Length: 343
Image (cartoon, rainbow, N blue to C red; front, side, top):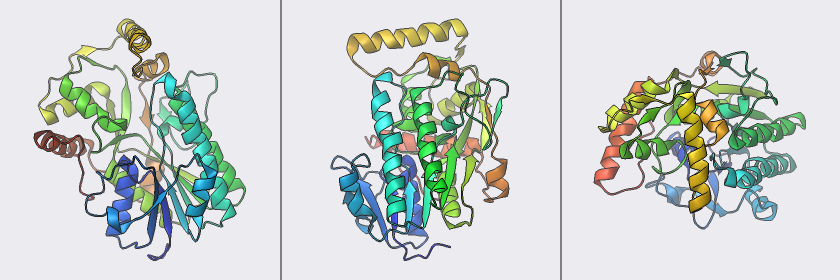
């Protein structure tokens, strides 16, 4: 067990997952929490508790600024990452997701950090063509097309595994699509604002989903466990995109997408997204690889996290209902973000 006075360093504490982990740590009595942030970081997701955290101005891609953050640190919870399917952000994802993790791992080794919790993603599991089920043992298939984001998370994991091989006590968590309230234009929370504007098509595949509250709970359980060099898939349920989109739309009173994103439409859509990006200079929200991934019937098997970590996942429909209520409330209040209770 990690002592409540142990010094815990968190990256990405102002983001969706990081803010929930930070708030849960404080709620459970951990009193010596420090977190990296940039000058532009917003504290919207940490209402009433931002002053209880020792904030450190640092960039995980800058070793010099990062080094001073590790003095006396016992535990590192590394959640910082860029999530994007825009090819123009490929270099940025490589710098932050891969290079940033390498820096965190190297400094953790140098400063004798006792525990390193790496928040990864199911995207790092890859897409083996011969099975729909993916779990902790799924091997990356280099012959299969993958998004730049997935590649960056896979390479990020390799840095974490390298740290483990060099003596770092490390545990890794791989959440599926995270359902939670945060900035409605960022990361997985963007689906709510997109649905409110109207999404005519639903992808034909399926995906795994997990409540951010369950992810933060798993992070603390993993931190306090004796497991070393283990990874755990975090996923509550696997359902078709059509069902997920219907539940999300109903939760906020939006129009339910009624048309399937067939292969022909899918191929046209990502090409139009590419053309729009070229003509306007805006982000490309859909690529060939990301479009193809939405057509896959993928099941993320979370048996290991249920049995070994004892995670009891919230029903997905309830999670969607909860976030939907927060989204509607934030819209009425004119806020661009929402905050969920820990439990």
